[in-house]
Image (tube, rainbow, N blue to C red; front, side, top):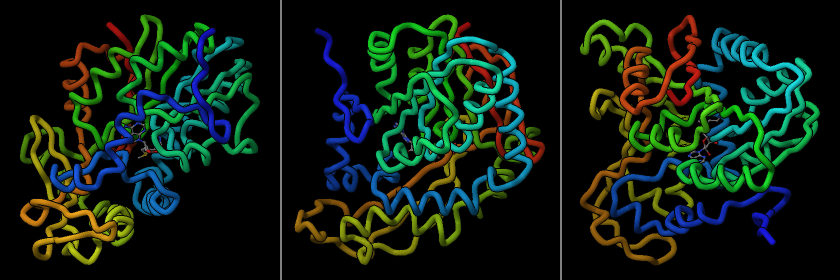
Length: 332
Ligand SMILES: C[S@@+](CC[C@H](N)C(=O)[O-])C[C@H]1O[C@@H](n2cnc3c(N)ncnc32)[C@H](O)[C@@H]1O
């Protein structure tokens, strides 16, 4: 008999993702590396709550125009499908606000829906699946999993739930990952008929020259250089008892290939000897610690990147403020 994935509070857990999570429990690993796995910032209830505060105050979605963008995207997706049995897999679902709009529109168009919200954060996954916020679903299958394992768990999902036309949403997940970590996963995960809607954080007015692009990324630094974001990103240091060992966060631009990312780092005040757990941190005192990195694209850079990874671009929706864009992507 096939083994079902273990479930906790109705949430299914992908066993193979646990290999990433075992690392998460080893502060030394990250301190010596000098940077954190992005998913580490969403793990606890406190982190999830602090991130939501940042999201409400500083994310482009806080603007009405970006909100309208997602509403019209949801309608456009729904227009493709009518009276179909459809699986929606939402990676990096977070609290699921945008993803639920897509479900609601699909439901309005008489589709029978299976929803597979996926996240590496248990508190956020539970928040996304509060029943009273959801439209009627034929099946709800919350999955605690790492998206980097998606090519493997999406096959198990097909075995577990049966084959169905599938649409993927990946909203807000790309910014924290290098293109080479993100797009190969997407390519391996997609079936021939599947469609994925991928959002990217954009910069307004950065399309003409490299120096315009750089200036445009600089113009959005304040979205990260603020007290709510500092509080969220340093929560992990408080949890590990390291908050007094570091100086205030620095927010800066870093070039990475053809892209610029916004990087939030801290420096150590001196040699950090021991942290709250009494674990010693060899070498940590000598390095900056990058808490977080967020890649910013222009529409052209996004499209160039997608093509480099041999994926096909079908449609795009760009906010009038040019701060966020969503692309429909498939296999060629
Ligand atoms: C910026 S939030 C986006 C949430 C929501 N989709 C939205 O657009 O508002 C990023 C989400 O991705 C999740 N995430 C980050 N890295 C992940 C990974 N490796 N695997 C699965 N989920 C991940 C985080 O826990 C968080 O919920």
